[in-house]
Amino acid sequence: MVLTLATSACNRGDTDSSSGSYGFSQAKQDDKAKITVWVDADRSGAADAFKKANPDVPLEVVTYDGAANGSNSFRTKMQLFDRAGEGWPDVVFSTQNNDAAWASQSANGKQAFAARLDQGLVPKATLDNFTKGALNPCTVGGKVYCLRNDLAQAVLWYNKTLLDQFGYQLPTTWQEYQALGERVAREHPGYIVGTTGDPWTPEVYFWSSKCRANDITGPKAVTVNVETNECRRAAAMLDTLIKNGTTPSISVFTPEFVQKYAGKVLMVPGPAWYAGAIFNNDKSLNVPKGQLGVAAPLAWQGEEAVTGNVGGGTWFISSHSKNLKAAEKFVEFVTTADDYQVNVAPGYPAYGPAGDKWIKKQESSGYYATDLQAVIKAGTQIWSGWGSGIFSQEAIWAKTMTPAVTSGKSLVEMLPQWGTAIKNQAQVDGYTVT
Image (tube, rainbow, N blue to C red; front, side, top):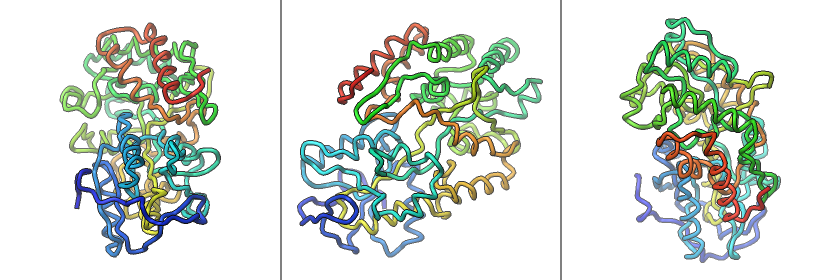
């Protein structure tokens, strides 16, 4: 049963606590206590799969926005529960990769929300089987505080049928990509090669250009420098392609996007989860079987290709839970079990064994026009110079840059304002900015 936040039954914080073996103080445990799980709408299938496989575990499912697009709802609500001393859910899913930065820290004398997972709560063998680097956003000070749901490395999605029909070569560099976008604007107006209407635009284009907009260098230290060549080249490329109409500033999740561009997406750099979220989805673009191809991340000429990372989702266990056993069982199931990650999940699983099976299942479906090896390889190409701080780059971009793009302003000219907005937000959150 899905309930609203207002009616959710959550844990109280007034139980006797004892120092547990997992590295944090634990509430008095009750293996029969109901656990409350917060998910976004897209992860309701994970809760359904768990309930089907574990009907004996008492479970209450609550839907919320998943802190999407940097809404900060997860953190805000946990702060309210901290002040009340009760109400914390046992498990929370977040669409963001920056929540471990705050959820792992105590504030105002209150115990940190996130339970430490790597001191016995989650088996070491399970943690070791996550794809290399997958748990980096969950790791603070060498300690693991969440499990990744899926990997969100950016790749180049393209319509192989259209590409062949138009006689175009698949680009391998960003320079070739821009040149193709300029050619498409002249020869096939109305077709597109990318999008800039979503708040993760900087993670797709600027992260892959090694723009140091978000280099987290310590627990409370960040380097912000958006006026380098690496930043300007990405901005200049987008300025050209926005102006000629081949990278529209419309969100891929809007009816307007589907109406205008269904059948006209020649290619788009974007995260691995685009596969099921917008392409193979009858509520979105619904690209026919045998047309969708995927290629490796683009490189800047003379450099090795790197990629950004767009979300991927994280699962947290509350340190306040009165049934850590059930909470851990739930989180381990939804991140590792074939019943969800292989059979239901639309994105490439972060858990290695599930990821291998997911790839095989996707390829055996015959839906894709190419194999999916590019998705696997891209998972090792995520550039390390863009970190996971407390503040949301997506929220900053949406507030500062999206209005500029839609009003026709130049991204190159807006770079200083973007940098100032990042620095200001980082300082508000207590970071020392270099």
